[in-house]
Amino acid sequence: DGSGDYLSAGSGPSIVGTGGFSVAAWVRSSAATNQVLVQQRSPQAYNGQYVLHLTPAGRARFWTFGGFSYGPIVASSEAINDGKWHHVVGVREDDGTTRVYIDGSLDGSASGTPRPLVPINVYIGADLRGGLNYLNGSLDEVRIYDRALDPREVSDLFLYLPTSDPGIAVD
Image (tube, helix red, strand yellow):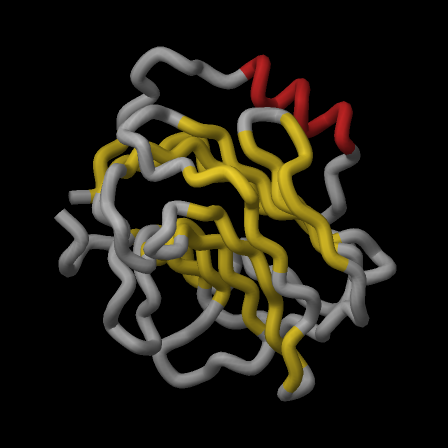
């Protein structure tokens, strides 16, 4: 329902440094609000974070913030807040290039300097530092990789994962 529900994964799955990494999830939402899917951020700290979220326009957006500066910020051109299941992947390459894939296909890309990430908590379904941007929808098959997935791996992940009703509801 978009208020109060989230999952804390602790700092174990956090990404550290400036290397490549990937975050993937199946999401279903029809809400027109900011909604965090996966975020590395703690209630006390934001420097060294990444965020994969939906904008009010339903676009998937992926970005990093470290060393007190933003890395590339990239949003999909496709809106996915249509109430259907979509597979979303955010990828940061070793060189800082940031990409967003929707349903196995590249949908946005930006180049820039990779920002350093630090070992802080990972949350699913909410921005815990601000206590807002709760997911109003469902998530499934959340995966965090400590390397940049290549386009073939992203496509294979989309084709491999269930597309019917994977269904872990965050509501």
